[in-house]
Image (cartoon, rainbow, N blue to C red; front, top):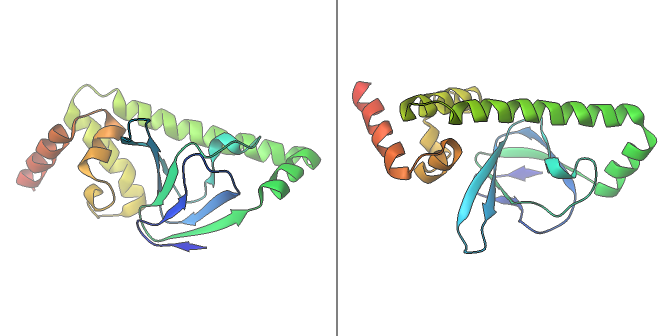
Length: 168
C-alpha cells in the first residue's frame, strides 16, 4: 500500500489490521477530548504498528498520518495473533521489536532532558536527519509538533529556528 504525504493510515479509536512501514515516515497524533491534537510518536521504516497491539489486539491509540510518501504492508490481525500462538520464535521477534522501540523512546527522553532549549532542538534535528536527509525538520513537522516532541512552546521553536538560520 502506498500513502502520500498527509494521507491517513488509520484513525484513533478504530480497530483493524497491523501495519509494517517499509519506507517513509508516519506520525501518530492523539486527539484529546477537547479536540486538541498532540503528536505522540514518529514511526520509522522497519517498524510494525500499532506497538501497543503487537501482543494482543486493542483499538488504535492515535491517528497515523504519512509525513512523507510511504510504502506500507497491511498485516491481517487474525493471522498475526495466530502466528504468535503457534510460534515461540515469533514471540521473541516481537519482544525484540518492542525493545528497539523502547530504545528509540529513551533517545527521545534524552532529547527532552537537555537543559538548553537549543540543545533539545539540535538533538531532534540530528535524529530526524537520519530519515529526511538535509531537508529542514519543518518540511515534515509543524513548529507546534516540534515543540510537542521536545517539550517547548511553538514560539520558542520559532525563535530557535530563526537563530539557527541567522547563523547559517
